[in-house]
Length: 311
Ligand code: FAQ
Image (cartoon, rainbow, N blue to C red; front, side, top):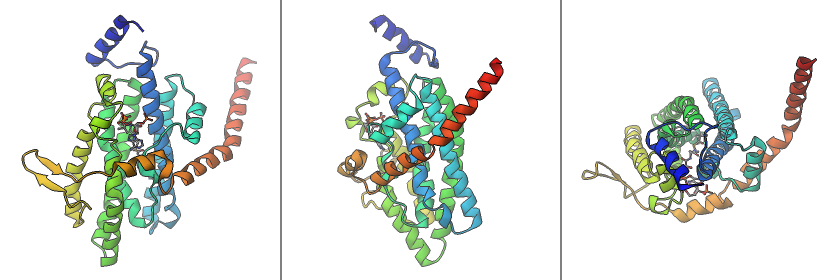
């Protein structure tokens, strides 16, 4: 790749032009997007599992219908994202193989177990809340198919966040036992939710280049701060407390300070040592194998239609 080519590409990015799949692009740009979009897709698909765990145990029909719809939406997000990645010349099979072999990551958050019904509320509130913070700027990502996919995804995440917050609100205003269940859930999910934004900027390997290419519009720490600032008042409104003694309003910076994040836990979970890592990959592999006949049937059907058209 000549310097001239790289400069011309950067000029298009700087001019806020969208890059489309058929455009010439640096190999590093393509690779970064395949990595990020692929991992984002895997997160949506693996993210169906912790919540799927509670569909049969939702406390009312209304809660069950909403949860079912949410989990289905996540499946849909995964499919948009795999399609967006496929425009960059990687196949769905290759991406799936990388997930199953452990080569491709998915969000650390989905390696924590959903122990109580309150966790379904907390996931909607915190995990979808964090996902929205991260994904709204991705609607302006320089790569067209990813940016466009994010618009609908964000609308749906917004519904997910509200349904979660409403579950937690119902529990927080319920019996002392229900409120305690909500607090226990917040205690377990708060730190893992902060870790979703990735390592501190100084330790974030890809940030500089991704910001330059306008794949990322904000750094990991900037988004984490925005999330904390939006979420702490929501917890206060519910009468719940975030499990961080150092979490205090800082007038000077106009945001909340927070205590140290346990990065050794983060890396342990990312590298496979979380409570649910093994189960998640086992379940995804089983689903892929059990679905093989469906893929085969769809291919055979498409082949028949094609042959009929040719005749
Ligand atoms: N978990 O240099 P950076 C959802 C890895 S929301 C695991 O900072 P980058 C919706 C990172 O990949 C969740 N790994 O990397 C939902 C890299 O390793 P690599 C999904 C993490 O890419 C809600 C290394 O650390 N959202 O699914 C994590 O510039 C509820 C160095 O990090 C997205 O994927 C982590 N938390 O920034 C579904 C959003 N953080 O790849 C169901 C799109 C970092 O070299 C229920 N992705 N790593 O092997 C992004 O915005 C970025 O990729 C970041 C990381 C911000 C996640």
